[in-house]
Length: 529
Image (cartoon, helix red, strand yellow):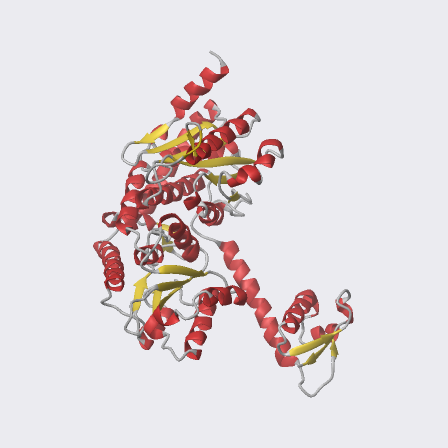
């Protein structure tokens, strides 16, 4: 049998197809050691056992003593109690009812006119999922146009608000914070509140809160009479929150059919519970990741969707995969430094960007091609004899896949019929399950994020040092050498951080002035502004 025939047979042997979703998964271009697959089976069954316990309500996030129940969101009957099932259904009904009231005009802006825009203030999973879904599924003329504030960058906030000049009286503002105290959305909220106040507008009459029941944000929203409060359940983590109110509310307000998203996810969930390897697309993905990276994340995941609508899928997967799998220690406490790095853009843009390195450079990656069969709704003109622009896109995907394989570069191909709410829901569910199974295989916890918390604590320490600095400056005194200032506030061992605080404050003309050689920070003199 020739090489082409062997490849064709290998493709058929490993091809997964789901008839209900018209979904294909091809891992035939991954080097799979038959011995690995045999050895892997007991661990796979253990991973299924652990996933089953998680779905039944076991504590999966020991750091916060939390259940992990995002699977219940698309099938409330799976929830561990009738109370939780009812809460899920009530939340979805509340979202649909509110969106309908906005669309139908029974809830109007204080001007008496319909709301036209939505500002979504969130961070991490509270923004990445909604951004991905908006780019993929929002209609060309949505009932509400969505705008994101997903950072604590003042200039970024200014740019978003400048784009809404004159429209704020008819703009909804949603603040997303599970705890109610996350700094980035809190900062965005305060900035927007100040703008509404400057315009003489009531922020509360435009505001929505998406938060945990009992949080500080919920209390504020209720006390000030905000337009609505929607729940983030304690058992929903940020990176798996897209099919909760975090993702469903903005989708519904944009006119995206959220029940279809939930149905697609539920159907994929059913497929990814099957215990036979070749009948389970999430298990096949986890196997491919394990094989290509030797179970240690030795190769990066490059995500190349050949569809403009899916441009942000790689950004969404970055958080889902990297925050879930990037762990220093395994469940036994051994130092393992696990993780899979994720990056990507889109095809065929990448034909003219970094595919050159993918084919001929360092072989430290594997590619996940996302193929969409339907080019567009309606007919396409020919750009060459018997060839449309969509044919070119398909040809570039197939050609790139082949060119990479010929140079011993491995790849996976995921194929969906079209980009709609059902297929997007299915993609979200597929990768959520694949991450969970892979984490079990490498014996780590996918559902906590101690590194993120460490970064937050370090940032808090920097801000505490800034406050000490500001209070130490004598408005009647002269200049102080940077080293003397550090010694005065007990920060001699943090002088580099102190220098950067001083530089930042000076650049923004706040609190202090500096003099000295910019190339020699040790010469800097600091005085109160």
